[in-house]
Image 1 (spheres, rainbow, N blue to C red):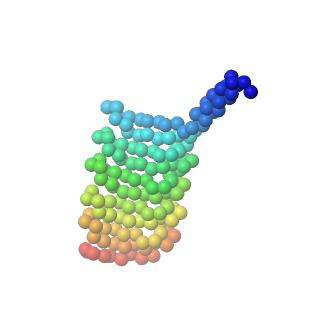
Image 2: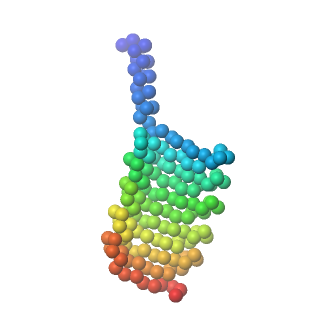
Image 3: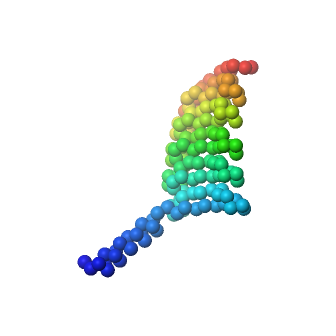
Amino acid sequence: MSRTILISNAAICLVGLLACAPKVQVTSYDGGQPYRQSHWDGDALEGIETFWFENGRLKRRGAWVDGLRDGLWQNWREDGSLAGEESWRLGVRNGSWRVLSSSGQVVVEQVWRAGERHGTWMQHDADGVPLHLYRWEQGTLVGVEALGKP
């Protein structure tokens, strides 16, 4: 095979790979700071999606698989503190979810299984003191217990 044909075939393969690679889309605030960066494979989100506040700090980050949220998603406040975490499995709530106070204390802990509330959920005050315990079984509330402060 001649060198020209080899180079031509390599160029065609490279163009084909680049055409199939996820496209990165970046949107910005009016001042030019990035607001959102997402990766697209055709019409579906694919890969990591990131949002920022106008001050440049992270706002939200998580992954997409075939256009569905998947894995751990994290949310931050404008001051940079972690506000919460969510677990997804192919677009369905699955795993632990936590909401944190501005001081970093867990105020809500939840467990989801295949999109349904499941297991023990805890509600805390802003100082992390447990207030209520909820028990769920496959989406059905089976018990509530008051804890800590009235």
